[in-house]
Length: 351
Ligand SMILES: NC(=O)c1ccc[n+]([C@@H]2O[C@H](COP(=O)([O-])OP(=O)(O)OC[C@H]3O[C@@H](n4cnc5c(N)ncnc54)[C@H](O)[C@@H]3O)[C@@H](O)[C@H]2O)c1
Image (cartoon, rainbow, N blue to C red; front, top):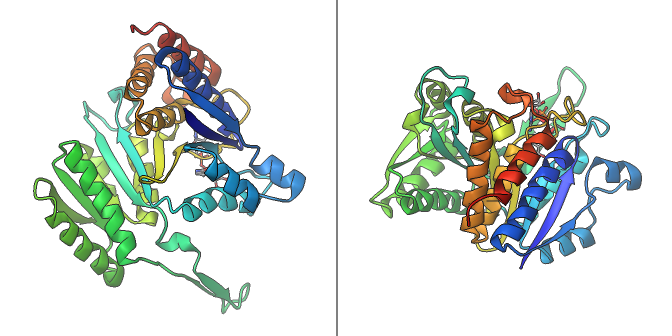
């Protein structure tokens, strides 16, 4: 029995999670995936109603009583500070020490890439998820005056770097991938870059079957557009990973398609589409649910339900081939219509 905590969240979050849940329900029936779902009312509505993002008790119950968390998205213009989203999402990432942010960026259908030509893109981005500039260390002095000083520290520890680099090498080795690329800015940020490069080569020595190289983030941004097919596994810091993975997602069809996992291997796992709450299209049936559905497939695979995960991935490819997709990909189907196509396709899949 898989105990699943579901946080639909804000904006398009509930719309795409509805589809992902419908897909999971069919997987239960078709592939015997036993699911016990609890939906959590966490997001802007709750925050505006009760003045609370998530209580300590809710946090403890949610994490104690679930094997995995599936999240839609958080962020709402009615909460301009975004404090609730930070409390919930960054709270979960930091408190559960979800140090691996795995974002696979595979081009499923070449016509959905903004890049010209027949491309084969399959990039596995491993972003450090608990350190870097996202630790909110720093402060502002003389705020609002012409003398204002703002400092945001970039925190990197040997242990923090070592564990994400190791996960990236293990991923490459286990999948027979040839190379791991470290992305940094060691020329302009030698203290942090030096630490990452030393750890990268020390850990890399333990994986002689996997090649390795290091590149500056600006060069990678350019190169991902020029020759994305030459990248396999990328490992990088929290900030660079955030940016590079959006770029990699865009060249493989856009944010609407991109899935992700936030993991502390062996302990906790949270799955979410890469996109945000997209308030500009919320409530209009325009949201592409495939990022959420593919995140659910990643969750199934993580929990050992390979057959169901493979069937969901195949259904997603099938919907793209059949031309059933939302307007962000140039289609005319609504969020629900894509969901309906996927569930019907899974219901009729051969045993
Ligand atoms: N993990 C998260 O919960 C997460 C991630 C990113 C942003 N956010 C939050 O989401 C809110 C909006 O942020 P943003 O506009 O910068 O990013 P966004 O990802 O929500 O939207 C960026 C653009 O992509 C489009 N888009 C996103 N997802 C789509 C989908 N599934 N189908 C079709 N189009 C889609 C949107 O319409 C928008 O034009 C903010 O409050 C932000 O903080 C949350």
